[in-house]
Length: 136
Image (cartoon, rainbow, N blue to C red; front, side, top):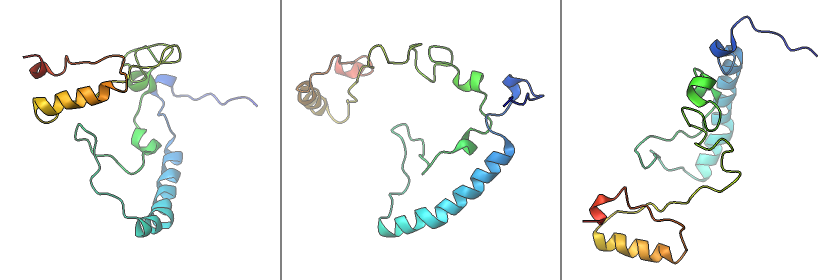
């Protein structure tokens, strides 16, 4: 089967076609009513979930959230600007990423206790550059 050629250049095509987005919108509304609501009655979900940066987290992300995404501009390939897929061209298939500890909450004593308790697990690195108050 031959693929149809679009008259729109690849760099200007939306990631998803409008009719697909509209169908997904309808399916999502139905999912919210028939699947999510009964589940919430059995087990209510927490409200106002957000990242540690204070960005609200939606229940689900769909292509509608990315309707205006330009693949090359917004995502691109691994190892290429804007590095949304990692700085390594092979992603992390050659070497796993470094697991960093997230600490620095509370008092200096609390942070020291956390570092020492986590050190038992054998971290490969301890990044304290983000915490200049720890080195004073």
